[in-house]
Length: 254
Image (cartoon, rainbow, N blue to C red):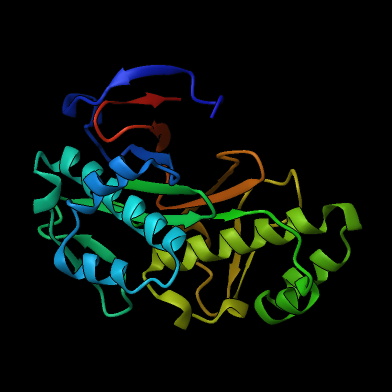
């Protein structure tokens, strides 16, 4: 992806984290069979069992690469072998390292791209979507967005409705993932910005107005036809963006 400019070796010293940094990694998922086999060997037994249950090979490959790269990255941050990284899961299913070393992370993948957000002592959520035409977009918006969001979305010009829909979708998903609540959290009980060109923001949360200042939102485009949202607990941080290319070699940094 051309937005990532220069090449840098994957040295643990370059991947230190403090509370004022949030690292966001992107990786393609269309690795060749040799690289997929390498990453499959890093997965835990339960992850390998999950991979085996996928009916279609393309979905199995995407899962293996996404989880294998995650283990590789967490191993670099914690100075551990990727295959030895242990994960624990919250009641809602959000994973974290065990022990966590203060690290918080979140993963999202769509089509042939995956994103990873890694932070230190800050909760974090990330969501990624591949923008494509949706035949039932009106029904999806009505059933997913809040009343305020639907009112704003319906007023958008037709040419902006697809982008506005995915802006809203990714920001809402990233927020509930940062909360660690999963899809049990009512999506119509909070409002996010969605207009194309408008800064990503949490506008209101029913019953807990202080939430608006607790979280920082950031939207970005990690690749052509992709839209993403990052949600981080607190203020006073900046994002470092990295591109993961090869499990045997190196990365590129934005």
